Length: 317
Ligand code: UDP
Ligand code: MG
Image (tube, rainbow, N blue to C red):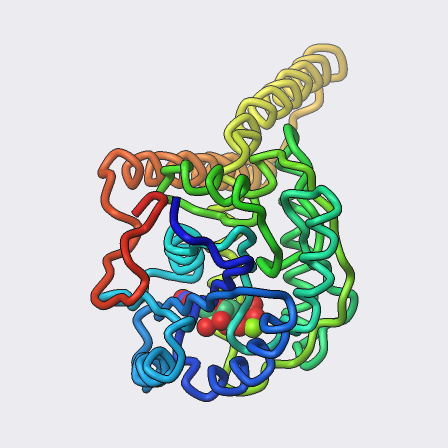
C-alpha cells in the first residue's frame, strides 16, 4: 500500500500557463486546510509554457506532481491519466481555469465523508459563457439522459467532483478507448451525492470546447452508453414501411374506384430524397459504432507519457 495523501487534486491542462499559478494560489490553501494532499497536473500536450510552469512548481513543492503527454490526447484521456496516477484516499477532478472554485472541495469532501463515494458539483450559474454554449450544453445533457436508460446520469455537472479510493479503483478498471468520464463514473453506480455551486468565468485563456468538440463528446457519450440510436433505424423502418403500405392502398383505391390519376412526380421526388436521407443517416450512425469498435480492438494505449514525476500508475495506462 502506498502512503496515501488524504486528497489528490487532478488537473487536466491544455495551454494553461496563465491559469496554473492562479489555480495554485487558491487550491493549495484549500487543500492545506483539509490535511495531506497531492496536486497532480496532467499536461495534455500543451504548446505554450505549461510544462515549464509545472516543472518549476514541482521543484518548489514536491507535493505538486505532473504527468506530461507526448501530444494532445484530449481532456478525457488527461482525466484518465490523472485518476490512474493519483494516490489520494480521495481524488478531486478539477479544471485548471478556476471555473470550478477550489473552495467547493471542502464541501465535496465533507459530503463524501458522510458516506458517499462520488460527490458531484452541480453548477447553478454559468458566468462568462456564451448563450450558445449554455444552450448546447443544456441540449447535450437532455439528449444524453434520453439515450441512457440503465443508470442515472446527473444533469448539468461537469467533471468537477470528488471520488473515493474505491470509486477511483473502479474507474481505473474500465479499459475502453472511447471515454466519457462523467458517464463512466455514473455507470459504476456507487452512492452519489451533489453539491451546488456557481460556475465562474475562466481566469485566463480560451475555452477548448467549441461546438464541434461538444458534438464529438456527445457522440462518444451516446455511442458509449447506449445502443438506442442503433434501434432507431428499425423503428423508422417500421414506421416508413407502414406509411408506404397505407399510401399504396390509398392509391389503388383511388385508381380502381374513383378513376383518379395521381399526378405525383413531386411527391415521388420528395419521398425518394427523404428515404435516401434516412438511409444515409442510419448508415452514418452505424459507421459511428463500427468506427468505435475499430478503435477498441486496436487496443492502443489511451495516451503516451513523455515526462512524469508521478511514479507508476496504479490504474489502466
Ligand atoms: N483540457 C485538456 N485537454 C483538452 C482540452 C481541455 O486537458 O484537449 C483541459 C483544460 O486545460 C481545462 C479543462 O480541460 O483545464 C476544461 O477545458 P475548458 O476550460 O477549455 O472547457 P470548458 O470549461 O470551456 O468546458
Ligand atoms: Mg473551462
